[in-house]
Image (cartoon, rainbow over all chains, first blue to last red):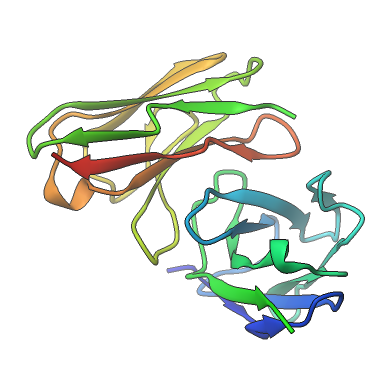
Length: 114
Length: 107
């Protein structure tokens, strides 16, 4: 059974960089798109972007200038970096697999606060 | 960007009721439409992919239909564990976009 697990700091200061990792277990990371999605408290889901195992990326236009994704196939993980964060970036961040988002991590809350 | 509009935003229903949620795309997305259920504090769970295919392990009371711009998620007989928020997602184009969600509450 494929499992995804997000990890990273739960608290980030304004103007700093949010960094998260999604570790994939129970299956290979190869030949799939891997997505990041976020959800502010009490609100809906927002797609942040995706990365293919070749390293090819697509980002949300609203976040494109601040987002970088990378993948490490040898470690079966991929990562998200979001620069110059503000309180508006406070959210639960999820990772999910593929074009249909069939497997999700449990989510990790990231709070932007000084 | 393709805008996804779900309706209603919320609904009240009873166990055993038939429930229908709709999702409308701002342009044609063929059948690149998926449905998710989310319970409080949990990640979304895939119910239906490519408009009408039931994800493995999902009860058969869930069904989906539609193509182009108009899509429907139906729960044939609502069960207690189905009270949750439901989202649609289009994967026809980048950026991926979700509907705003439909909260199904107990009447």
